[in-house]
Image 1 (spheres, rainbow, N blue to C red):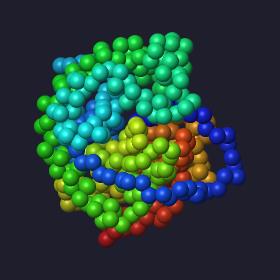
Image 2 (image 1 turned 135 degrees about the horizontal axis):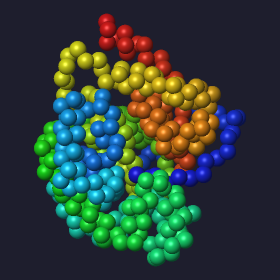
Image 3 (image 1 turned 90 degrees about the vertical axis):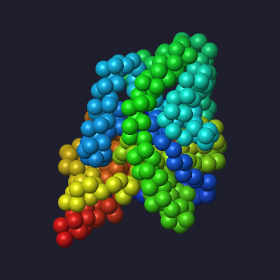
Image 4 (image 1 turned 30 degrees about the vertical axis):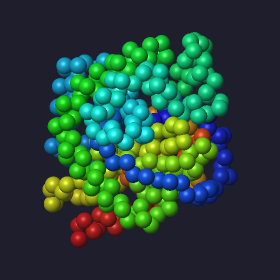
Length: 358
């Protein structure tokens, strides 16, 4: 996951509404289907945040299990910190389930975990000197690195630099306490993520790498970048409808939300999740304003936040909802990310509702 901010380009009204996709050189794209990845996402703030994305009984389990965890183990650290553990196991295929994930955390040196957290920064020649200096104890460099992250992350970031062994130990204890609760659902989650991967077999056989990534993530158009030689796609149930992205070494990984079709059907009268997602996304003033901006051209996150006079985290949340509904595409090109309107999805809005009511 890459929360570091970068300065966006200035407003450019003449920018074309639809950009070139750039290089379409094929990169190896593989699916990595392990509950260990879902477990890493399961305590993140966004997991279960949208009550419409997970069936009611599973959402009730998640809320109860989390409340029980907080009551017994306490909110000792930022729960979002657990997601970085996914970067530890991408090249360890033997780590398949939640229990093995906890074992890895327990045996991981704090400095190794720090390198995973700052993998994107270490790949950036402009940011790496500050990260390296901060890891060596340079307080001024530490202040600069921390300032690039959201304010609510500053506490554990400073702890990660000052005492990485203590922080990874606390994280391992936290996930060990969460383990027996997650294991209550793990067999069902395994069935769901395996079903999702099977449903995508035709896509894997027929789509190029850029198209496969965009289809799987439901709207992230990732363009090849220097140094990246392979892309890994890992399905997650509890992350729905959000994507988590990671980088390290020569790889890029997307932990993506399983498709609606991978879920077990429950209520035969329930409208398709895609219809609900689409109309919820359209039923918000700020999101409609964002779509109106994207009508004319692509926009960077910073540009949208400045234009609507809202914080970047707020705008990012709205854009995540629009992307999940299929209304916008997030394109990652080098160090920049920008958003585009998916006009074809607007045409689908009334057609999907008519099909449901027919």
